Image 1 (cartoon, rainbow, N blue to C red):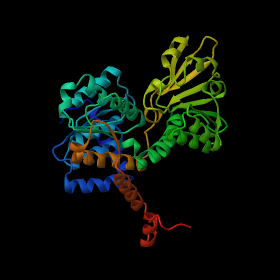
Image 2 (image 1 turned 180 degrees about the vertical axis):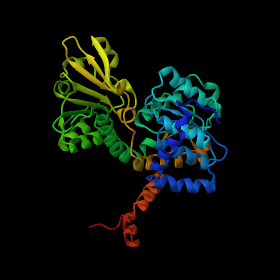
Image 3 (image 1 turned 90 degrees about the vertical axis):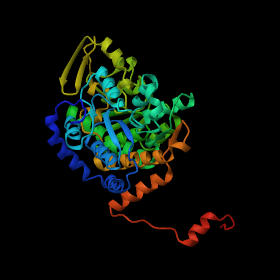
Image 4 (image 1 turned 60 degrees about the vertical axis):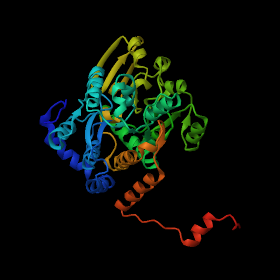
Amino acid sequence: MVKHDVKDIGLADQGKLRIEWAEMEMPVLRSIKEQFSKDKPLKGMRMAACLHVTTETANLMETLKAGGAEVALCASNPLSTQDDVAASLVKHSDIPVFAIKGEDNETYYKHIMAMLSFKPQITMDDGADVVSVLHKEGKDLLSNVIAGTEETTTGVIRLRAMAEKGVLKYPIIAVNDALTKHLFDNRYGTGQSTMDGILRATNRLIAGSIFVVCGYGWCGRGVAMRARGMGAHVVVTEINPLKALEATMDGYDVMPVMEAAKVGNIFVTVTGNINVISEKCFGVMKDGAIVSNAGHFNAEIELTALTKMAVGRREIRAFVEEFTLPNKRRIYVLGEGRLINLSSAEGHPSSVMDMSFANQAMCSAYAISNHKKLKNTVYSVPEEIDREIAKLKLKSMGIKIDKLTKAQSDYLRSWEMGT
């Protein structure tokens, strides 16, 4: 059996069934897998993937392997691993996996290093932890790496900062920036799965609650949309005047986070920044306020400050921790402040991840073919890849669209014709 560190290899058969269930709703990735099996565009490549170990990710790993790659996988978040999926990939797909749900930080980074011991030529990241570790502790491995991809907003922010400072040592394609990724994955995927995570953890009624969404990017839009759809009164907090204006025009109340902290019943951070809900916020929250995070890292909630403030702390139910303050007010933190949609639920629906992981697969093949032309910076997904994935998705849904006539094409290319 391939090298691995998973919770229980005996869960493999259960995981295999769940992987098959997810695959049914991933027709775009399936068509790419079929093409990869014929063309082998990844042949001979060693690929290290640091992603949420879910059923959808399993289908991506099998697609990369079908394309000829040697793949190793670790988790991109300590609470996002589905242990049965990790076991199945090891037993049934012969893919090295280093991931255990609930692993501590030391184990998390040990798993990253175990994956990097395979000396990857391509990295596939979700949060840029692998790139960061390579540049800090794995510099001797950097000479092997020709390119990488990045899945999420938080990671793209980190990588662009590295590129701007001139310290990024290989080119990265920002898969997150693909329209077929962030318009759908971030909005519909995060919107639905975040609500799913909150409901599984709490079993609280959303209707009638004051639901605070911190951040109105594509993920924040999705969460706000779903919360309103379930009957919540939605409040948005923002630092960007354009996004704040958009949220207002979309019909939400917009206010500073300290004002929202006084009135909210349920809070979700989705900004990619630190201390969005801070010590001051905890000081004015209602008794029973529920705080959660849908951003990549748990730093969005100032948990260290809350821990110091609390005179009592207990786990009251799975993924719900109660902090009692000196004035007897209770604040509930979900999923240790980590990604709530993956810590207490199963992450994005397969049909959404179909497009996101199609981008990962196709961008990997693109990077391998073009890495000699690429500089050590962050690139957007080529438009032709984005359009091809959209076409494949529409085809799988049985939807047809119009084509320009010759006259229309000529008109769009001309400057002579006016009104």
